[in-house]
Structure formats: C-alpha cells, structure tokens
Length: 113
Image 1: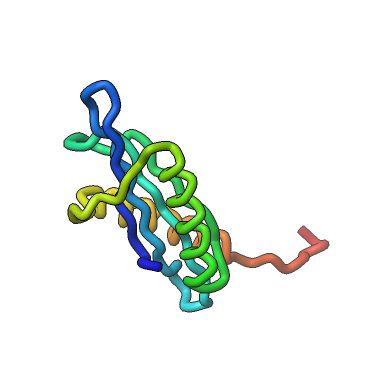
Image 2: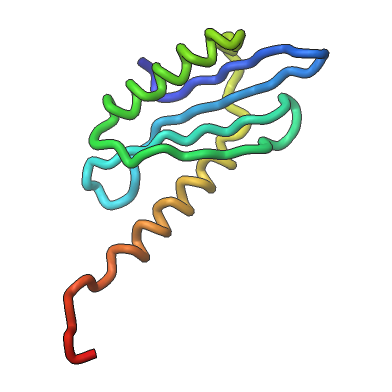
C-alpha cells in the first residue's frame, strides 16, 4: 500500500477531494500518523484530521487502506493527480509534533510542591 492517497467524487457539479498521507512523527520512536485533508477540489481544504499515533508505518497504512475501502463504497475513486494540499498536511504534522514535544515534560511526582 502506498503512503499517500488522493480520492475524488463528483456530486451536483462539485468535485469533493480527499488526500491522505502516512507520515512519521518526530522523535524517531517508531510512531506514525495518518493525516487526511478534505474539501472541494480547486480550493483550500475545509477539514484536516489526524489519526494515530500508530506503532510503525504498516499499521498506519492498514488504517489508510480501510479508509480507502470505505470511501470507495461511498463512490470515491482514486485520482492520479499530485497532492495539492501537501502544505496543509505538513502544517498539521508540525502542530502534532509540537504538541508531542510539549507533552514530553517532567512527569516526576514532587510531593513538596
């Protein structure tokens, strides 16, 4: 399975687009995430969602395959175009990595405080 996927569906003259990418999280600890951006083709994405973290890329790719299968059942088809919302997805990844770094703080118990 590929680590990226673009699906589209035409409805009422509009083309809905969904781009999904499996990416490693910062820290080199083997954690991966799946980020999906969705919206009307030719405009900015209206929704960006992340799932995970997953332990290893194959787990995240399996989730991506399940999402692709479900969307295919809803009428979406693979689109050979390049990912146009890659910058939005990278921005979401930076935010996820930033939250993870802030949450790696001092978790020791200090009863005197």
